[in-house]
Amino acid sequence: MTTASDMLAAYLAAESAILLGKTIAFQGRTVGYENLAEIRKGRAECERRVAVERNGGAAFGGMSFSVARFDG
Image 1 (cartoon, one colour):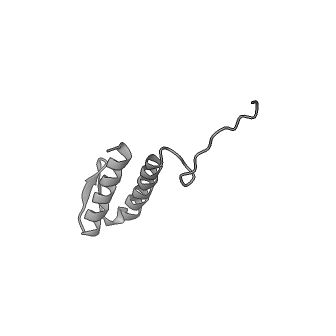
Image 2 (cartoon, helix red, strand yellow):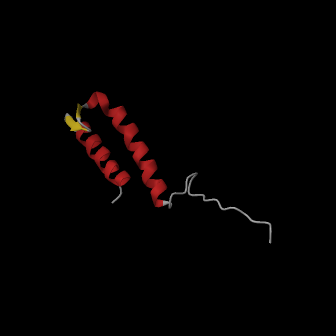
Image 3 (tube, one colour):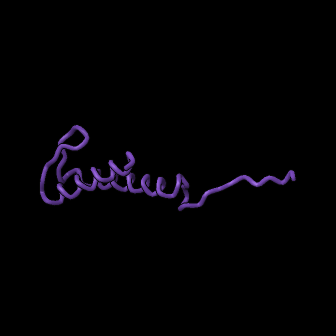
């Protein structure tokens, strides 16, 4: 598992707990329902990072680029 995957799992667990009405300790502070938008924003960023890692580091929807050489 990668760091991005680990963080995604943590964000998903935090979001689930908050949706169940719990207040939890997350990243060194206490968060609750009032922090749900912040947790979801962090989850979305982690999902993006995991997707980039799964695409072999290629950004822009999985497209990768190479350099063409025309010198023979």
